[in-house]
Length: 393
Ligand code: ADP
Image 1 (cartoon, protein in one colour):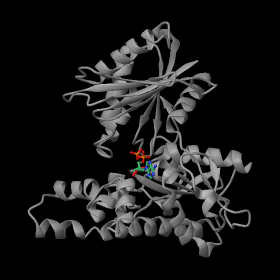
Image 2 (tube, protein in one colour; image 1 turned 180 degrees about the horizontal axis):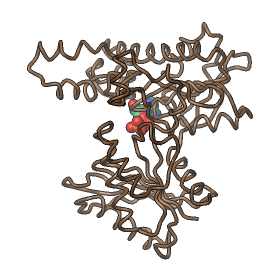
Image 3 (tube, protein in one colour; image 1 turned 90 degrees about the vertical axis):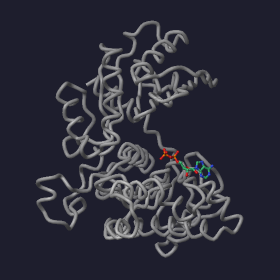
């Protein structure tokens, strides 16, 4: 059965088509600069990468070209071969604890939830509506980035603010990157042959989050009401004292929107290093003795360790820890510094076992108190799996 996995952003659309249940990738690609000048798309098929420039005025244009490419490249013979289309949807609020088939009601709810995710849900909806129009017979499924975290107990998700902010306005921790944390949890359940493990899953990409998994379910997570909480990220501050916001507004002529934008686009590794939001550039800076890059990396590592330590205490017993995301999978020095900082928990590793990028591997020694794995995460396959499972019933 052919299933498309889709991630629509405001000006981009990523896709991957699978043969299910084999999970074989048939074609993948990305449409970029939708609605902007110089639009282009890239497709990968049979190990070949093809890049083309074209006009993409909206998401529907991208979907039409995608269908044309699928037919021309003989990935499908006719449209009715596409049985399901799974869409990543960032915010499911407290309405969705699982993936769901998209009905008119679901579309309305995703739209209503846009007030919680103004940058993401409207873009996700554009993708959903474009495919509904162009491929009307396929089953559409929404796979939410928040759903996995819905098992958190109240003490993990309530903020210490006036309680009616929660009851009236939905102010609570929702958590994000749930599709990745779910993938990591399912993978470790299989590896450990344990259906109810206690885990700490670290998704360290450009955005980053850590989750505590108790008895196989999400118990706590570092992202919060919005995707700017918890860890130091590429350009996001993560946790800060909220009083900084009005203080900076009073000291500069910046509006609330500008200060909020600085906290998400000019902070994190970029803000502290002054060099880049990309951890590779920060690593280069460290190798050249750039003091601010050294400082940025220290803040990054310290925050990761703080969260792992907090979750270690919350869980009481941890069966495994894992690293994923661009940095978790590839940055040898970041993993090393985090694991060194956790030595007091009895975590032991050998540097040569950590000297690799981008593959599944156990990196700790046999006598380590907690085994630690590197797991290349795969959000696209999770979307395809949930879509397939909902169609198959
Ligand atoms: P996103 O959150 O946008 O999906 P990714 O998971 O792709 O982000 O992670 C991007 C981060 O991964 C960047 O900071 C990048 O520097 C880092 N990264 C990717 N490859 C490497 C590498 N080989 N070494 C160190 N860091 C890497």
